[in-house]
Length: 250
Image (cartoon, rainbow, N blue to C red; front, side, top):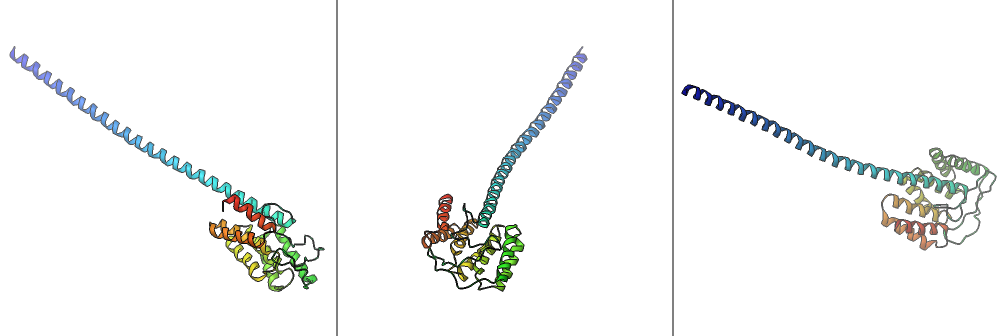
């Protein structure tokens, strides 16, 4: 009888030990699952933060792309207005001085100020006018690289001709409209330095101000445009400068 009781007690102890072991194993499995789930939650949270960050970057890039497209569109509209002699934002200052057909005679030179000093005694030869019109036609066709080459050759051939200041100005425009701002800045600066009495000076100064703004040089842009307004108060370029400064908060 005692042996049976002892045997029963041993069986109960074995069963209890097995149950404890099984319970511990189940607890360990559950703990591993909990840790795995915790890691998964942490990873998902990290991924969500990355997604939000990437979404913000995409939105920022889309915004910058839209701004770039708008600026590019404004540049082309600006050139259209200039080539047609029309007005509008960024239109050519004062006197476009550009003959729109080969039969149009070259315009007289004017001073860089608000008052004209009358016609220049220089008269363009037939060859000079033909070469100028050839370069200008390339500009109208949006063949900007070819137009640049033609205008550079024109200035080398006719550095003091009646079309020289116009050619220098349009050389700057050919680079400006393709957003080659450093090159455009050099070309527009040449208008001011080499042809200080040209009617293209206000327009070149306006574009120099625009370029400083595009290159994030706000203070230089403000000073340039303010100087334009002070020196040429009656010019259309001065009015464009005022509107630009209001729009950009300069």
